[in-house]
Picture 1 (cartoon, one colour):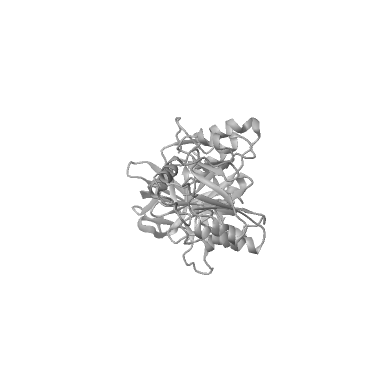
Picture 2: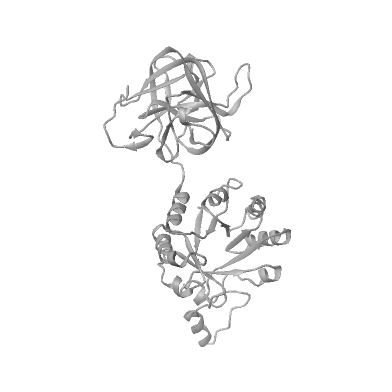
Length: 396
């Protein structure tokens, strides 16, 4: 699960208290500071990361071990009595390394406090890049600042540390970069180190971390009527992703119900497959996007984000590369759900336009008959400007 550490060291002094409160209330994974006293005031819900240039408070348990005549731990091992003890004031010690010797001297746990050690490295060339890969393979946490603005060095570290048990934390300089870092090589960095300018940026980061796509409970819809409605404008949605054979997007004439429209992943006569495309429907139609937000197909364009939906209800975000609007003969498909709710879809009147049925069955719209079953989604909310709203609304 991806996480974020909030770096307090360069937060403007007037904003520091508000940022700390925001980090705690937004349930940020960790807070980084060189002030051990400040970290000691934080609740145990936050991982307190102390930068190593600050004094390390002694661990009473380790001291008791010495008094009792026990031997000191060797090679960075923690005495049994102190191994599970919480160090005073912090949970993780962050130490900088820049050479192989310095990395070798970093123990998995700090000798004096028993705290896990995080290694920090500034990657500026091939030598430090290779060193960061070594750190990622051996340390519980490896915090990396990349001088190169491209994400190629991060890709190299992610690939090198694919099997590592430790966590990779990447320094970012803004929320936009944070979103990119989390998506590199699909896996992304485990965590980020972020210096906010104020509390608002902490809460914005929390929303970014929570951003995900839900598992949808799809419904079976029964076709009750099909009719040719004449010429109109329909929208093809070309995404920047490759659809699976049982994936498409949800489209409907009413905001309360959608039909799962199939992508052009399956073979077609006279033309190659276009696995990035969904021939979605008439431009007035709603389509479902992330965060339970709908858009008209007329609003969808380059850079928009929609939900790709599988026949089993799984979802993922897809980015639109372009939307293509053309005038074509249209076909209206009227269906009803088990509860009697009407779900309508208007699509191009052409054989190669397809929808999905139960089990991911591919159905050509011009061959649909009364009683055929389609997959769809029933929304519980009415809509205003695409947002769910609890008001009376009747669509026909």
